Image (tube, rainbow, N blue to C red; front, side, top):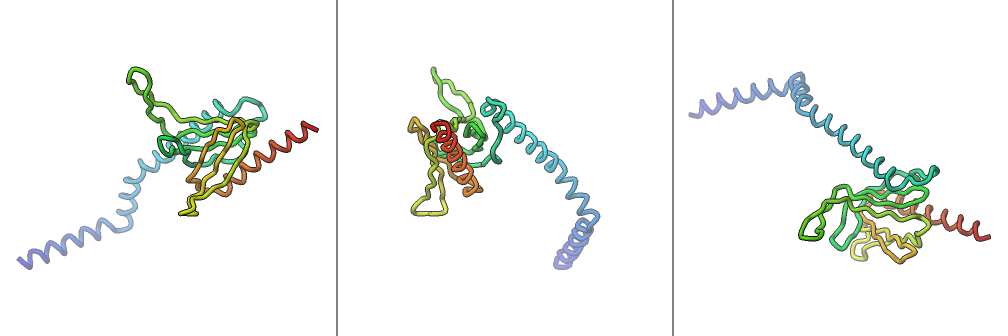
Length: 183
């Protein structure tokens, strides 16, 4: 019995070495990874196309309107919980669109799936306030307040400092323009 186990063990090791030899390994891994790599590229292209479509539909109303900075992946805090999406900043608007459609109940008990969207014209922007969780200072938030006293809380930024800086610059630019127009 012991000899049988030893023989099978040696046979298994030989097969394993043969399979893991560099030419075989490369071929096998490439054949396994190829569909995923292709899909990943298609998903990236699709995501960029979706971003461009959303931007064109909701942000481009004027010829001079263009993206000010790259879009920011983040969460929007809602009464139903955080919603993952992308925050866009243009020369005329701030907009957020969820990455996935959300289900909501409409009349007669029916459900509707729709993307969660928020669009705030820059001239309606009152304040951009940084905030942090007192218990965990690494949890940072950005509060956007509109002229109508609506508050939007964004969190979970990958590049929090860049997002805050660019949102504040947009507000400062707007204040300078209003100041110049009033004088």
